[in-house]
Length: 252
Figure 1 (cartoon, one colour):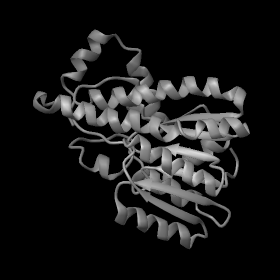
Figure 2 (cartoon, one colour; figure 1 turned 45 degrees about the horizontal axis):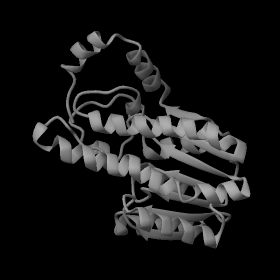
Figure 3 (cartoon, rainbow, N blue to C red; figure 1 turned 120 degrees about the horizontal axis):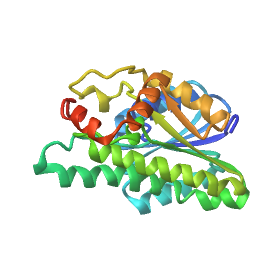
């Protein structure tokens, strides 16, 4: 969608979400920002307002279904939400068997159920007016399972495939659905990774790529291209070979 007027973003207090808010911020835009960290969220709001945007912030948790629905409906009453970006996500290692169940549940609650909680309330609204756009932030990690990040990769695979299917379902209703698959982005989430991250890029550059992809309604916005090519190559390799490689890879 070109030049959306009202943009709602989850996970907007840092990383890609914050960069997207500032990239979209202008005098013609309403930004509805959702995040868990009140201080960081307000800091982004101040910067966006300085660029001329009308900004509303909501501190909350995307795993709270009722609160998310109330937020979406409340903000849509102000002005039709043209673009909703379901960006909130968490990571975490699942190498230690003693916390694998707890970590897996937490990751799926935010990365999968949290996406559903953000997009499902707005879908009927967009369908009635036959216009709107939904962006689901997945990850290149969602193309292959790796030891130490099984839950994260699986959660991102789930929302990637869901978004790709939803795109076909919503197209007849005039709704654009796009799946965003970034590689390593320098954020507080990746800052804790104890290993080299190839082709890592800034959230600001990632936001520009995403905005350009959304403007031309690209089905899958996967980047950087080098990492995307590498991941696609790895998915084509025999599982037996990948098992031997995975044993040597660093864990989260």
